[in-house]
Structures are given as C-alpha cells and as structure tokens.
Amino acid sequence: MAKVLNFVLLFALLLQSCHSTKQEVESHQTPKKRDTLSKLKQSMSSLIEDKLIEEGYDIGIVKYVENSDCPYVIYNENSKVQFDPINFDSTEFASFKSNDLKVYFKYRPLRRMNRCNEASPIELVSIKKRED
Image 1 (spheres, helix red, strand yellow):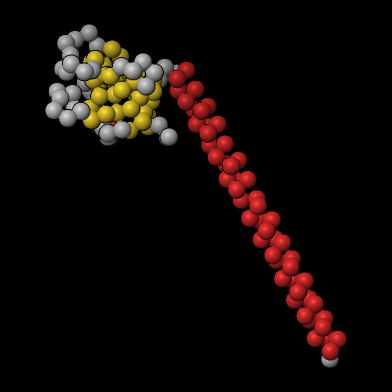
Image 2: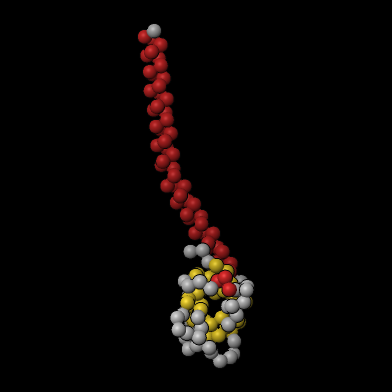
C-alpha cells in the first residue's frame, strides 16, 4: 500500500512539474509573438502606404476649422499645405468629415477663388482612411 501511495505522490509531483514548465515556456513565447506580429503589421502598413503614394495619393489629416468658410480642410503632411475640398459634402466623401482623421487622398487643384484664406480649393478624387 505504501508503494502505491509513493507512486501516486511521485506521479502527481511529476505532472505538476511538467505543467509548470509548459506555462513557463508559453509565457516566454508570448511577448516574442507579439513583437513579431507588431513588426509584421508595421511592414504591411508601410507597404500599403508606399503603394498608395505610388498610385498618386497624398498623406493628410482632416481638420475642423471653427468660424471659417471652410469648415473642414485637409492638411497635407508632406507639403504642409491646407486644402479646401469643395466636394466634401458629397455622399462619397461626407463620411470622412471627422477632426484629426488621418487619410490618403487624391485631388485635382482648382483654379477658382478661395472660399477661405487658410486653404486652397481642390476637388477630391479619392480618399481612404489611414490606420495609424
């Protein structure tokens, strides 16, 4: 009977030690997996951005301007110029009217009188939300 009890105790101790080793290994792998996943997301984001820029998109931020004839402008992050998209109210682009929204956008410059002093008029051709 004592041999059976010793065997059961030894077996239980062995199982417990294997289980704790498994937990230790898993806990060490998790941060590594997170780092790899984070690097992969950054690489994908960079590739997407490069492709969109190659297709003619600019990088910008939608800004709300209080007390202006141009309630929303797009600030071009590369050229530091502000644009007044005259067709921002169209159903195609209205969903992008959100302060500090990061976007990729294509536009056509317009040769017309400015509606406001702080931004040049443009016609949006395409706009996409940026994930940052």
